Image (cartoon, rainbow, N blue to C red; front, side, top):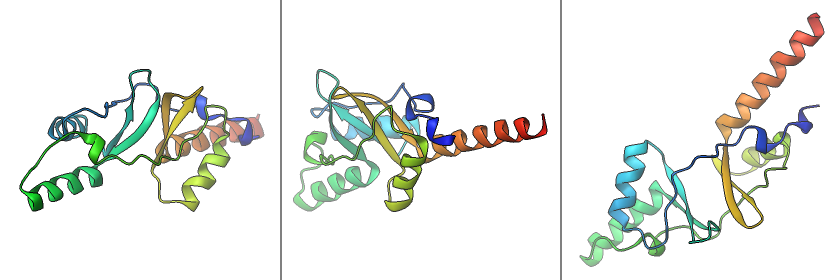
Length: 140
């Protein structure tokens, strides 16, 4: 029955996003301001083109320190090969992907455009709500 619960039902829809030409330090400030560890990078049409993580930012700072040229745009540092999921994927499938990989979240893409994000936290919430609902039905 939990397989009928879809990513769409639990994904976060309002995300901090960046464009490839965003300045590295502007991106770092936004990550810190919003207390998040990374954010999707989209093009002008809202298509996902990458992810920027704290690790990517650290790499950018270290490369800049090494070459004495800190900064630049996030296009140079973002991860371009991004694992995504569909809003129609079931929660169990996504939970299995979280267990197999080291990802903490997946961007949700529909028709080539970023529509949200699903995290491990979101999946735990879905499972908890489903379990509580099932317990209530068993008692009733």
